[in-house]
Length: 221
Image 1 (cartoon, rainbow, N blue to C red):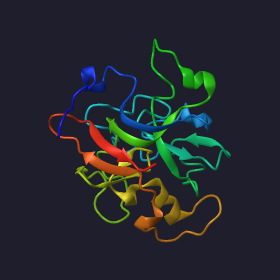
Image 2 (image 1 turned 180 degrees about the vertical axis):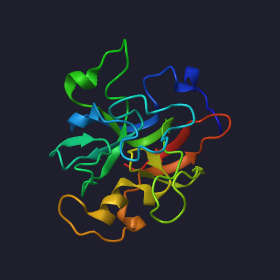
Image 3 (image 1 turned 90 degrees about the vertical axis):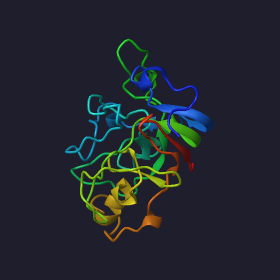
């Protein structure tokens, strides 16, 4: 499919958002953002790999990123969302994805920073979007394969929330699959994760290609 009408100038490198809303259902700003949502490193969990799109590096910004996943954060408390995080070097049990953050929480130089001022970072639930930030490599060995292997996104594939809080088409790389497998914090017993245990974030409508690194998807929420 490549680029579509209305593509952002500078291929999004000049924009404060890596998410383009095509059809909106809900903008959610009810929950507060967890404190580490402003300070987390990126990638936030698997730091040995370059988790980025082909044009937008994410390892130069702190805090949750535009087009990254808004998770429940039971380790912080109710009515709180945040990014993917390790607590005491462990995955947090019962952490679930809710949607995609619209903008970077920490903002950029010479911009207003409403998230910092309000303690909230709105995210989108449902609709169709284009995203410029997603996993480009396999992140874990769960399910076989090689860590660092390139990912290819094709129309109709299911999307999940990765260990780094980015979209991926490998459910085995999801944050949920990791805490189900380890059950390292919180309540619960470790067990083998299966695909139905993992929240389906959406479906690929058009994968990135040589023309454009933007990926189009329909969100399930």
